[in-house]
Image 1: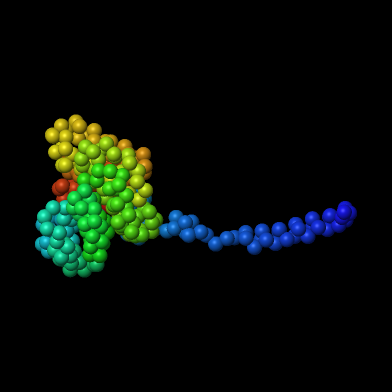
Image 2: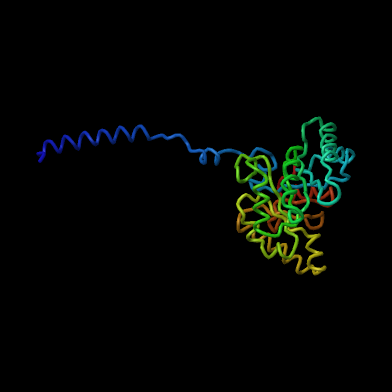
Length: 275
């Protein structure tokens, strides 16, 4: 059995060993997750959303070179909403629209484009192709109309890949999920709470049809989605005009698609982003 002197020497040696090991591991390299948290979003649109600022977009009208030139001339919009939900799936014409914006402004992609694709429910495999082709064409956002379920939301997230914000904090792509049917409103918390959803929008026009013109029910549906967005810290969007954009901002909506170009300056002023 070791005596007290031997035990004391052993304790001193072990203490020195552990001290040395502790010093060697005192300043570990930051993990990948920690590094990602410190990174900024890779696009201006995602950055504004990450900061909790309101962003404003306008519809592409008309959806051709003329419309692209008109969009480029408007320096108040944060993005352009381009729809291929119905009608022919025509990526080349959208590319012409985008090229016209670049030509007029002298900048590459002066306004990011968000592309509305046909509903997932029509063809899930086709939806994946639509997303892929839209991203390849250079859009910064994919808009998914008539999202009705958790499964739809998961596909919308999965289809965007590793560039999706906020799944990737430095991502440069966003998804925008339109909840515009009664079944979607019923699943609003599941849809909005899906990890990786960038923006959710209760679509007033389609909700009006879904609730057969009952505007009280439509507004209740809109507020249901807004409440889910606040609960899960997801940006909520809406369409608005000059008369109601201030009210929608006060309610907490963070992405506004204007139906009147003059509403852009009103929104920027009301949100505190006006010059």
